[in-house]
Image (cartoon, rainbow, N blue to C red; front, side, top):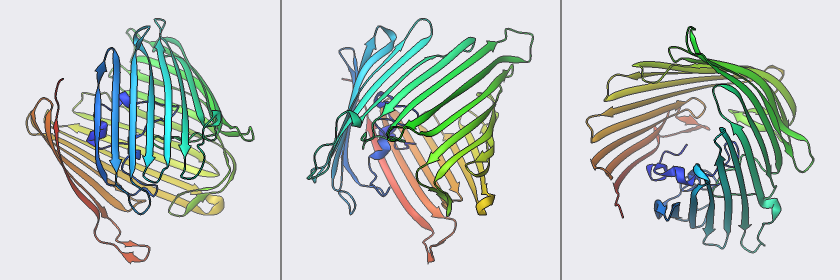
Amino acid sequence: PEKRLFFQERAGIFEFGTGGVSRLFYSRRIGIDEDEAPVRILGGVRLVGRMGGWDVGVLDMHTEANDVMPSENLGVMRVRRQAFNNASFVGGILTSRIDAEGGSNLVYGLDSVLRFNTGDELVVRWAQSFDTEPGEPTVGGVDSGRFFTSLQRRNRQGLGYTAVAAWCGPEYLPRLGFAARDGFTQLYGELRHGKVQDGGSWYRSTSQWVDGGGYWRTDDGRLDSGHFGFGGNVQTRAGTWMWADLRGFSESLVEGFELGDGVEVPMGDYAWTGLTFGFNRPQGRKIRVWGNGYIGQFYDGQRLRTRLGPQLTASKKLSVGLTYEFNAVRFPARNDELLIHLAQLRLVWSFNSKITTDLFSQFNSLDEQVSSNLRFRYNFREGTDLYVVFSESMWTNRLQDGLWMPTSDSRSVVVKYSQTWNL
């Protein structure tokens, strides 16, 4: 997730989802090279506002060259306006990534979200990329496009549904965005039923669902991945949510991949089932606990995942949150296993209405590192802020690949002053 304040502020205007976690613009692409190493940002500008009934967002950044990539200019422009009613809009987006050696990547997208008085919502989005490498012709056409549409009714009482259809060409390439996969046709459907209890019972509402769908490869028409399952949840009068979902999965791997620490899943066709469950205590309590987990098969092995997150709101000025996650993946036939511990700490301390300190620290046993981020904010007045951010990653095991590493893997201090004007 994006943590840099410059890209977090007013980020909603640039949202353009293309299905699942995929999106046409993903700000984490800025300031990182193909090897996932940081790239120096020389400067940039962001303008967000409203002009003649249109919501407008413009972002342009310029990065320095390094050993892997040339200097680049990266830009995005987003426009949208209300249409038909106050809850609906139509819009468009354009992203560009142009390097100093003549390479370029341009992507445009058109979208509409229509919300009706019946509670139904229709989403339609189309995107297309044009990619040029130095000395090569531009890659474009229909095969570089992506289409997404969904129709759904969200409600807690009675019958609800979701229907999704999507298609993505094999040449679709948003270099300033994120695409989890390309070259597919997707179909997905869900039916659910909810009930809200007026009184006289220990529960406030219940919901049940059945859903399923999959991705089919456009090159050979085979099912690439799919799932089908059913489940339900219940909310108590005290506000606690509890839920469970039993699901079957199917995956066709055209190549193997590594989970981590040398544990691999080989290519092949897989089918498995698993149970996901969880609970969530309501917001607003001094002590709040949530948790979830998974138990069942995983490709040709088994997986156990547990996650627990106690949170303490000591006062209006101090809150502390802890998260611990444990994953155990085992493949008995191959005598492989992977054990991963992930622990996170978040502390927010407000000295007063103007001074706030935010600490986030994370331990990942797979990376064998502890990463910490300490942010100090001073709010002079509305729209005027000073930030001082200290970040450091430290090795928990200094012996890496036969070499002794320094205690600190990276360290940085960032000072930011923000001034907002009303024009």
